[in-house]
Length: 102
Image (cartoon, rainbow, N blue to C red; front, side, top):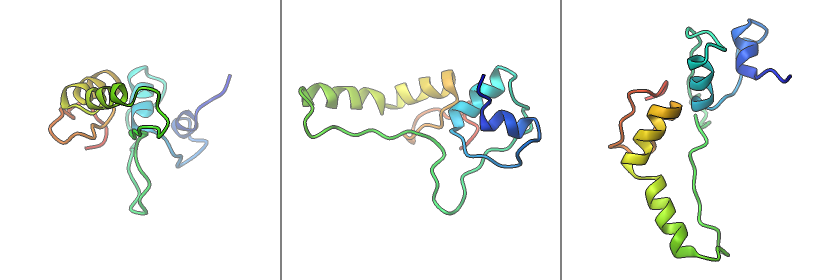
């Protein structure tokens, strides 16, 4: 069984490790890591999550991709991801009340 870096931090084996905010939130919610652990984004510019989207140049249905990206990045969908996964929304009007990062 592979142990995540976050679990090693929680157990005191590491004092710092990289992680995605939604992964850390999921581990917290399942009680797999301590709630006291802090999550921060370093000033060096490291991002705090994997929220990125792109349209491949050779997409067979580029219009469908645009519709999907519009749905994915909407405030409503970003709010749902925040509530369900703890992901910090990338859409400013979205609800971020469940995020561990503002």
